[in-house]
Length: 250
Image (cartoon, rainbow, N blue to C red; front, top):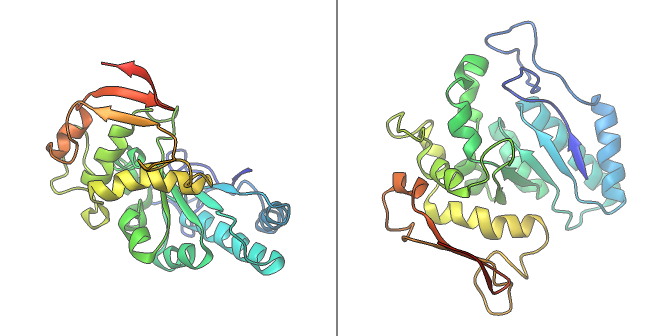
C-alpha cells in the first residue's frame, strides 16, 4: 500500500523540521496529521500489508519511522519489508533507525544529479543529509534502487552514473556533490537488482544470475565495469532477455 507523508522539495511541500532557506514562512506540508499517519501505518501493518511510504523531508522521514516503530510495538516484529520511497533528506540518527527497524530505503539516484542544481538554495546546509546512499549501506540499511519513471527517465544507466559519480551528465562538480555518499558500481548494480528484488519479496526468483531464477537479463555492448564512469551513460544495450526469450537485439 502506498502512503504519502509529504510533498516534494522542488514545490516547497516536502516536510522539514526547519523552514526552507529560500522561504522562511514554510517548512513544508504534511499530507496527514501525525496521529492519523500513525493510525494508517499501524492498521496497514496489522493487516499484513507492506507499506511504501513517500517521504522527502527530514521531518517526514522521522514521522514515518516513528509510525513504523509504533506498528512494530503494536503488532509485533515481522518480515514486513516496509520501505520509504525517496528517503531524500534523512538525519544521521534516523539513518540508524532505518537499520534498527529493518526499513528499506527505496531511492532513485537520478534525482540527486537533477536536484543538486538547486537543492542548496532550498535547504542550505541540509544538503549534507540528502541522498545518503553510502551512509545507508554503512549503517546496514537495505537499499533498493529504481528510476521513478515517468517522473525521471526509465533508463537505469542514468541512475548508475548518478550513484557512482554524483555529477551532472555533462560533468561537475569536480569529484561529485557530497562525494562521501558515492557508491561503487558493484554496490549500485546490487541495489538495482538484488536490492529491488528483496524489496518486493522476489529475491528467490530474480535479482541475480543463478540456476533456477528467472532468465531476465540485459546484455550490454561493453563491460560497464571496464568503461570510464561517464561512458556508463552511453554504453548501448546489446540484448534484452525476458524469461529466456530475446525480446530486443541491437
